[in-house]
Structure formats: C-alpha cells, structure tokens
Image (cartoon, rainbow, N blue to C red; front, side, top):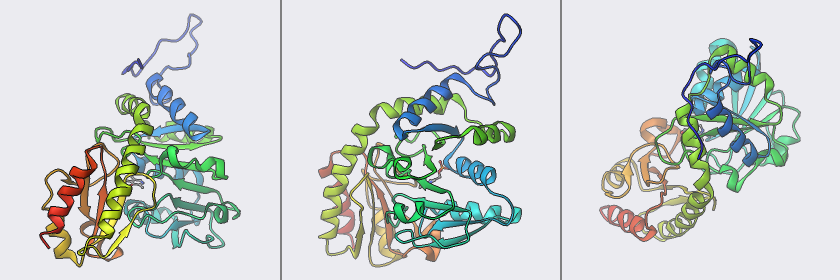
Length: 318
Ligand code: PLP
C-alpha cells in the first residue's frame, strides 16, 4: 500500500546534508510517488499543484512574460478564460480560436482542451504542433486512458485531478505533465504553489481504478447519449465518444431548470468525473457563452438504466 507522509520536514543525512526530501514546499514523498505514477501514465514527468487552476496559473506565469498572448480554445473550461482575464493586469493577453483548425499567428502559447468543456469539441493536435508556439492540452476530460498528448507532440498536459483522476469528488488537485519540468518545479517552489500530501495520496489511489472507471463511464455515457438524442424534448446532444461527459440542450433556461431540479439519483451539482452522476445548467455560471438550455451531465458508476430512468422522468416533466 502507498503510505501517506504528512511531515513537512525530514532530517538531513549524517554529514548534515539535505536528502531527497527535507522541506515539503520543495518536494515530499507522497506527492513524488503520485507524480511518478501520473508521469508514467502520460509518458513523461508530472508535477502536482493545489488545484487544476493553480496548475494553470503556475504554468502561464512560469512560461510567459508581459505582452505575450495565449491562443485559447473557444468554448474551453470557463474558469480558464476567467483566469486569463485575471492575469491581464500582469500584461498577459489571450485570444480565442476554433481548436478544430489551426491556431492564429503571433501567439506565444497554444491552450487546447480535449475535449472542451462543455462543448466537447476535440482539438486538431497536428495543426497545433505544427505552430512554432508551445502547445498545452488540458486533458482533464479525456484522461490518459483515451489521449496521451505528449505522444502527439504536445509540450504540456494539464489536468484538473479533482475530476476523473481523483475520481471521487474528495480531492482538489491539479497536475502538469511534460518532458522537462525542472523550471516549472523551481517556479512552484519559489512561488509556494505546492501541493499537500493528502490529495496526492487520493490521486495515487484514484489512478488504480482510473481505467475501470472511465471505461464503464464511457460505456454508460454512449448508451445515454443515444437515448437523449432520441428524446423528443432534447434539441442537441454533444458527446465525443470518450469519457463520461455529455452536454445536451433542452428548449430554454426554464426547461433546463426543471430538468436539473427533477432528478433524484443524478445530483444537481457542479464538477464532473466522479463516481456519482451530476448534472447542472451551465448558463448560471457562463451566461450567454453557452445556450440557456444547455445541461452538462457527468455520468458516474451507477447502473446506466437507473441513470436513464432518472433522466427520462425529469425530461418527461417538460
Ligand atoms: N480544466 C477543466 C477542463 C475543468 O473542467 C476544470 C474544473 O472544472 C479545471 C480545469 C479547473 O480545475 P480545478 O477546479 O481543479 O481548479
């Protein structure tokens, strides 16, 4: 079993020299073990951060300088665009582009999402890696089970570990994977954006069941996406065929509110990627960036017929 070491300090060696671990802001054994496991899955190295957003902040600040521009996938996770707006006062800019085609010229970092949340488009990775700027793929939803971006030439992979990798809605954590993360690690230590051991331990545990979970979630989501597409009250269904995340539209905001508050098994809550099915209207957070009737549904590990039964009775209230 993996051990959980909550120490913040470890004694120097018999000559008074620091060993591998001496102060937990620099590195710690439970975090290092989880990083090794995730790095192996992504085909590179991995570094953990206190949240997915913390990982994004650290990477943007470590890599870019004032005046630089990020090309951000249109329709990507709302919080990422909010982060980049927040960083504007330090001179970072961003432009949005359609990630199914090539990124714009004159940008210093390309930020893709596989698949984007909640529009669920997949990026054109070949077009992005042909661009001279470094490429980051937020692969939170795909997970390394379905996509290993480093193998396709991406420079960095980002995860909200809070989602599928942790998998149980009980650990807030983020990660960056890549081939040479020494500068980012040094930036993490110096800025103090260091992860705690408890969520790292939960990541290591989550990775052991990751493949079994996401394969089952994919199977269930495939069946449910099909049934949604056949339902008279459903206008649009988006499902890329990997992972457990679906988004679909009902007529308008009022209809979405009725559906999200009428389920019993499916929790009306935010986030995604856990063992419990959750659904929410995204309009409340994202405004007119998304259709008023858009519902985001994260399929958990419950019996898929029971999930569909719950969803169908909610849709039948319309
Ligand atoms: N990236 C994606 C695709 C997400 O869905 C989220 C959270 O919803 C994040 C990043 C941010 O992660 P965290 O909430 O762990 O900061």
